[in-house]
Image 1 (tube, rainbow, N blue to C red):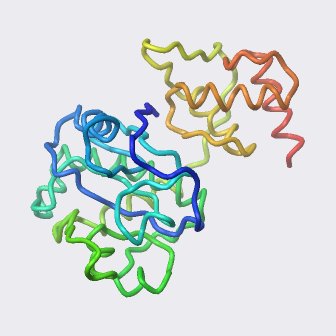
Image 2 (image 1 turned 180 degrees about the vertical axis):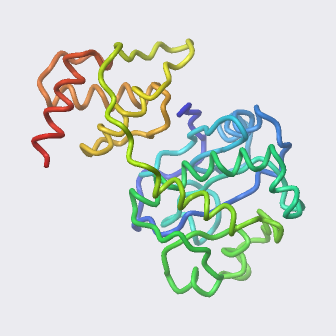
Length: 260
């Protein structure tokens, strides 16, 4: 996943993650909106941020999962926040047009990884449940209603298709087991060049994630994948390069076998 670090956030967390909070960017449904809003968080935004920005063709990391985004008062310390391109004024039909459907399916992949990582139930919480400390999904407006007087946001709006979105999240979580992928090429990240992508990248990321390394399983070999690979190589006592060559791949398979 591409990363554009937000300017305003808090290092670490004071509470365990329990909420996945959905927001609308109040920005156009265009394929570059996630990148544009992420850059806004990084440079000229007021004191606000989110963990991931999503549009119909990309997801951009702005704040690491282990850090606290400044996204919704009273849901920052224990929340993970997704910004979607689009507007709170959209009706259900607008959220289910081709562009928004693609955005929601991309967001479902991000959310599914969090569901598995933090054991988050796939259910839409009411404001009362948010305030009571339950785990699950909610909208920014649910946080506003749970804690009156701390904000006025109503996104992503009454037309947001929770039934469809949560079904897509569930489908991602319950997806078919991935077929074993054999090593076929060295995975390398070079700053300023296009990411290497594909099933082998996703398989390597999934292996790192299974072994306990913090990496997004998104099929794009970028800076975070390189960092996680370096950490694994250090522990595995193989040459530390940040590239997933055949020796590193084989060491990963061995570590996976020893873990079982």
